[in-house]
Length: 203
Figure 1 (cartoon, one colour):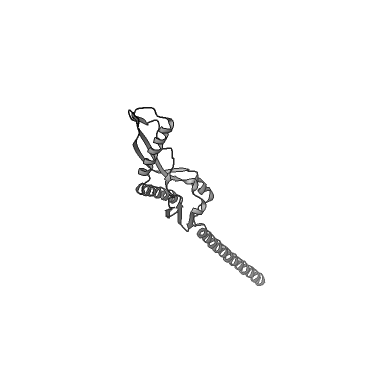
Figure 2 (cartoon, helix red, strand yellow; figure 1 turned 135 degrees about the horizontal axis):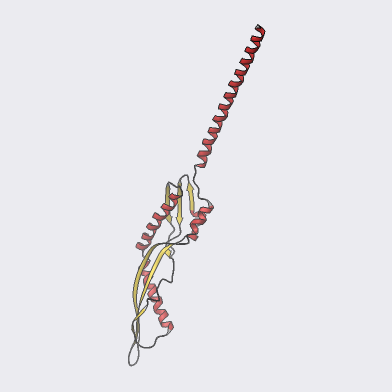
């Protein structure tokens, strides 16, 4: 009977040791799993701009940040022997200042941790045909004028409007608006810090 008791006691000890080893093994495995998960979390915590996100930004196309309306009266006089011919016309136009986001390539976007830096293309006139020809009207007209004469006046009106609209002040205002909207968009993607710069405008 004593032998049986000793045998049962040994079995219980062996079982206890086995259970203790199993518990220790489980704790070791869990600890390694948690550590690996933490490392994976830290690694995955880095925010990046994916090619799909870049394409979605480029898909915006022409993005207007400022519009400038103007009206110009242009006249021309043709001297004659008996009388002079005169043509005066009033032109109306709205210039749209902005950026064609299709020019934003991946090399213009750099990421460091939760900070993204974007080098934007320069602010420019999005459409050269900004004069509303339907609103153009003659202020004074005498004599006969050809289509070439009217085209020359149209070009003069457009040049005057550009001179008034594409000022440094208006470009800076458009850049400020672009900066605000780009920051909002990139922060929505998860970036804490957004740095926006603009390429110099080509003359």
